[in-house]
Structure formats: structure tokens, C-alpha cells
Length: 295
Length: 295
Image (cartoon, rainbow over all chains, first blue to last red; front, top):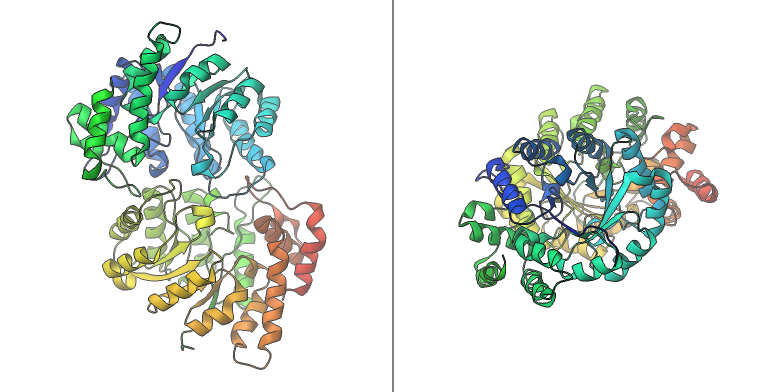
């Protein structure tokens, strides 16, 4: 067990208005509620945030709104990785200028089967363009991106850019990979994408979690983090795993949004952009159960 | 055998300057050479064009340059499908306003495992926003996009939008799928992504091909199309298959660009954007062989 601080960063959902434009007021309200509810910070514009369904301009405007609403930029790790380097650079410069703690950066993800050397070049291009104030959290989510962040790639990036490589989010669901990253690179913050793995992550020297279901259960996850060494840790772990397991059986992102809508008694939060569709009624009971267990 | 016109549309490569900005002069020069060399038209900003490594602004400026250079918009089917609908709409409106024959549209491709209903919504959103002048060629390339264009989806789109659904490019490499699309939807233009399949495509009632290697071998592919019913068709088919087979053993897009550079004796054409890397010297002999066989 190391003394690294264990944190919860929430990949906040992006609420939409009836015309599917970003509902900035609800986005800010939800963000503030998450922090009030126990999150150490937010990782907006990730997979759960439908970030890749937002334009560059929409993402910058929504991030501005969070900061204008008084959320500390040091509590923000916005996603900025796009297919086109120009877009990734624009978003990363904007976040860096705002003073964000760092950015969560997908590799360019259209082309599959690309080499580590090519992915290194892609990250290097952005880091060189944005400059030394940028802090990069690498985003490993091969089941969506098709482009894994391998251990040799992480090593080469750290060799080249030192502390500018601040961390990694492992959304692969492969705990062995997370453990290998933590062991090989103790100098970076490694987050699991599942709150169920927080005990293992913390024990190995990881930095906590960035999890979709923390949109619904921030209080439960925060209680687990705070109680990791306490007498209730089994019960706390059971609670977060229970919520997570319910969502694993559902279309994840629409179900998370439906659950937030139910929690807030405000159906506007349930809207999704294509290619998602709103959660079907056949999942209403499961969503209600997740909300009942969440805190 | 139907009487449909068989055509070659080339997914033209995008040349880059030393700073990796779009080299518009070489882009236009290559485009004009392809048409002079036998292509019926161009499908720029596809996979081979590294389109997803270009920003929206870069894509629009490069398309403008083709039209300003005197290429008929009716010979252009630019790729416009991005992850974010706002970007796809901007590009599709621009191409439609220019008078392009249509647009080759990827589905939103970050999220995997999405439903046909969600992908339908994504296409519908763009078609409704751009309006009745838009003609859509659906882009089926599941090995890159992770989002297949299924037969039920095509049917639903044609039911909703009729002749606005103009065609489909099948890059899956699965001839059975191409044949099924042609059989089920004879009213749309279905292109194979391999010139080796032109005889089968033409015999079944398809519309021809949109193939990466046509950047290098436009004359050979055009000769095959023109000679499909002639005495030389076996030799012509052998030539196009020979070129294609060489590229299948190489990192495709960098190798195509290296071959164009060799053909034009101009190394500038070989540059790629990350996540690609320039073709290694170990492939120089194969690239030279492809150029030797091409015409």
C-alpha cells in the first residue's frame, strides 16, 4: 500500500436539450452536484460524456461553463483526444490555458492496427504543439478506440516527456493490464474504470477511478475510498459493486443518463445523441434498482 | 449482367507539406492526373485520404481547391462522415452546395455495439439537416469503423429517404455481403473496394469500384472496366489483381503514398500524418514492383 491519494473523477454525462444541443445549465448543475456528492473532480468529455458526438466548439463552450460556474480547473481533466490532431491540439490548448489539471487524451482512433511508433508520433505532435504546461492522462480503451496504449508506448512517452505524462485511465477492464501499468510506472496516476477495482487499485499504488456509474453513485464510491482501511470496507465495496453490476447488464451510457434523470426527477437528463437511443422501458426496473442502491 | 455504368472513383491520397499541412498544389495535381489517367471521378477524404486525420476546415478548403481547379463537382463524392453530427453536417452541406454528385458517409464510429436504430438516427439527423439535395453513399468499413451498415439499415434508410440514398461502398472485403446488397437494392450504386472484384461486381449489377490502389493504377483499372466484355479481360484482370496483391502485403496507406511518390519522382507525396509512419525501406522493393506493374 502506497500513500498515493485515491481519487474519484467522474466522467460527467452531457445533458441535451430537446433539439439535442448541449444543455449547459443542466450540465453545470449535474457537475456541481457530483462534486458536492463526493467526487474529487470531473473528467468531462470522455466516453460516457458522448464527447465524440460533440463538436470542438461545443466541448470548449461547455468546459468554459464549468469554470465560469466556479469549479476549480484543478478538479478538471477534460477529454480532448480526437481523430484529427488539429482538433486535439485546439481542445488541449484550451484546457491548458484554463488551468485544468490535465487532459484525458484518446489516441487517434479511426485507423486500426497502427504501430506504437505512429501512436507515439500522434501524442508527440500534440504535446509539442501545446507546450510544457500540458499534462496528459493517456486513455486506454481498446474496445472502443481499437488503438491500445501499450506499456512500451507509455515508457517511450515518459522517456520523452517526463512529468508531462501525468497518468493513465485503463478502461480495458483487464485488471492484469492495470496492475502492470501501476507496477511499471509508479510515477504516473493510474485510474481504473471500475469502482469495483478501487481496493486492488489502491493496494497496488494506483490513483483511484474514473467510472461511468459514478455519475449515479458518487457518494457510494467516495465512501468506499474514504473507508478503504476502515471496518466497513466490505459493505462499502459491496454497495459500489452492486450498482456497477446493474449497469453492466444495460446499454451503459443511455442507462446512466436515465438513472440520473430518475435521481433528479427530470427527464431532460435522459436524452442521448445518435448513435445512441434512449433506454427502453424494458430496462426501467433495472435503472430504478440502480438508483435505489446508489447514494 | 445489367446495363449499369461501371465506374472507378479514386479515394485520392492527401499529400502533406514538410510541416504536415495539406499540400494543396500536389493534391490538385494528383487529382487531375487521376482523372486524366482514367478515373471516372474521385472519392476524396476517404480512408486512404487520411480524412479522419484532417480537420473540418482542412477538408472544406481542399475540396474547394479541386472544384476551383476545374474538376466537375459531378465527378466528386467526398467523404464527410465524422463522429460528431455537427461536423458531418457542415461537410455534407458544403459538398452539396458545391454541387457534388454525393457524399461518402461513414456512420459515427467511436461507439461500438450500437443498434441499427441508433445508426439510422445518426444518418437521419444529417439528411434532415442538409436537406433534399444531399445524396448519400453509405460507407461500410466495419474493420475500421466498428459500425457495420447492415441490410436492414439500408432498407430503412431507403424507405425513409428514397433516392437520397444513392449508393454504398463496401470495404468489408466480404464479397457475399456486396452481392447481397446489390441483389437487395438494385436501385442504388454499390461499389466494391477492390478492383479485383470488378468483374463480379459488374456481372451482378454493381457500379464499379472505389479502391485505394487506384491511386497508383488508375489506367489499369479503367482498362479493365472498358475491356470487361472484350477478349483481353483475363489479362486486364490479372494486371489489376497483381498490383492490388502487392499492396495487400504492405502497410496500405503509407505504401500507396510511397508508390505515388515513386511514380511522380517526388518524395513529398510519401509523407503521412500520425498515427501512420512513412513506409520503411524494407518495403521499397515491393513498392517499386507495384509501380512497375501499374499503369
